[in-house]
Length: 342
Image 1 (cartoon, rainbow, N blue to C red):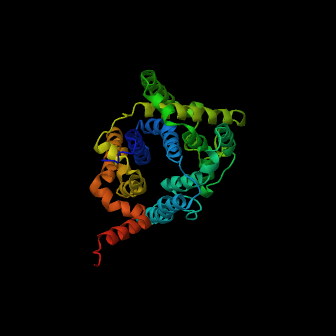
Image 2: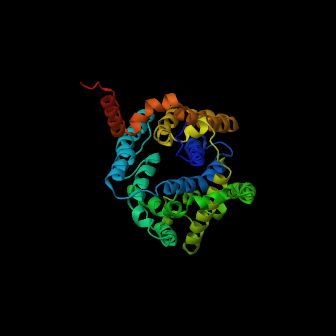
Image 3: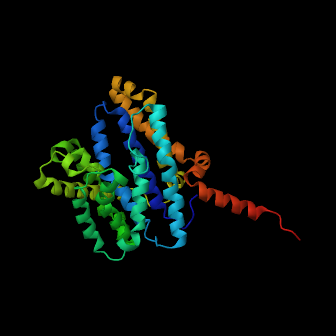
């Protein structure tokens, strides 16, 4: 069971969101399937904003002190330095994908979130000084679309910044309103409406805008309305994020809540499994059986999430997500169990 000091609702939310991350990344295996683009756009309209918001909310206590900087090094920088080349060379050498680009400077596929979250955390003590940083971050996000570079995923760092800053400034009493009956009632038609919008994404926006990593120059939208469209995507993302989070149970759900504490294990390892299915020819099967392939892929993605988060698997994989922290804890454990001389 998670420690009593943890908020079970946040762990439940994290588990829902990380499951959607895996589903979203798995959709790439079934691009030829009918409905896959709708599922993809629906998820990406709000689940990344929700994940960034939760990351900001959980970053409130970050300061430039020795303990927290060490934690940043252990839990974000070291995993990024290790898993960025590991996934890159697995994709290129085992899967046969033609991935290119300099390691670490241009994050590859799923690894972008580690380095971007690290940069957000580093400026957190400034961002949480005043609520005026929230409207300023919206301006930064809108202007950030001018950048067209993959270096350190600066477009995503700038584009998703408002969700992170909002998480820094909202307090538990604010999020408690998500439990209001009227909010839960409104959340269902809101998500249905976003689902309908996702059907017509390419008529009012572009899927590339949902990723927050593409410069305006590469998006086929008139310059006069591209800023407005970006703002609309942000507002839809925010409404979808809060709608979905309001429907997540507040109580401890036992094994599901416990799995919500294993998001880093899931995030770092799910890409290897997805790319393995790519190498095994899963897209060919889904092309032959589109509907069945989509259903099986979504079910498989959910199953993969639960498998990676289950206690036996998690115990094996967690040392790789924070090797220095694991070594320190192992040394302390051995020192504590050593017999004392008399």
